[in-house]
Length: 330
Image 1: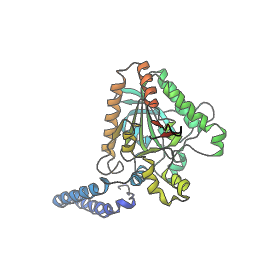
Image 2 (image 1 turned 135 degrees about the horizontal axis):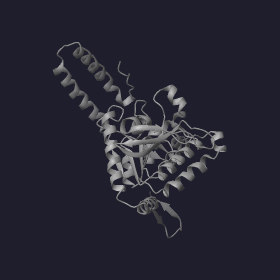
Image 3 (image 1 turned 135 degrees about the vertical axis):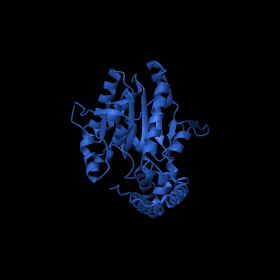
Image 4 (image 1 turned 45 degrees about the vertical axis):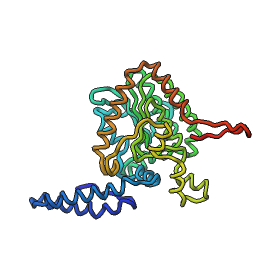
């Protein structure tokens, strides 16, 4: 039985067409000739998808990044790599289920895979704390990165989090320190680091595993210091202006590339990763291999030098002489 699809408000026009297609497939499986009808319907679906997904607003891209049917980190680990062996624990406090990672093979090439995991149903989401890692999660990630460096394995991180977990226990165990430590250490790792935003990329929770030689974003993802809802609540005392906040935050993949924060935008297919899973997996894998080939041509010292330069170049400033104040324009 096919998994029941979830439709966002702006996708509702596809529901009827998808249901009709399933009916035609059932008739085809019964031996009836519906090839002509199916071809016409597929053309109609393609046209509808193009009309919807070619003109998405920033807020709609935020909604897509959170789509419950969107592939999560463990699905990428399963579909892009072979022999994924998950490792657990930070050797200090415990094992954070929101952060997953382990050794794997990328077409025979050993790598370290790390990422936030949200889960795909209610039970899994609760188990993985909705992808909100605690200090032990970031320390586990760093432990695995150091292990990768020891064995000279490239590191590939998958970012998908609404933010680091803000609970009292997490703060008491050093949430901010654990993220800051990761930033410091990732800048100095000798092995190639590739970071890919596959869903939500919120604040320090995202950048805690997001300092890389190459930063990539799927086209319907976002990357910023605060969610549109929280931004709206701060600026307008209500989350009702989330669409306006999403526009103002410049959080989309295209915004990030224009601001030179990310290097590559990865295509998801004509209607998002949740409707084009195999195509998305293929595109992500191709980009990872392309970047690895580039980074392996550099020495460890060259990679670290370029990594530092990359982050030092983010943002620009204009000094206003008559007031002496400083404005940030990026």
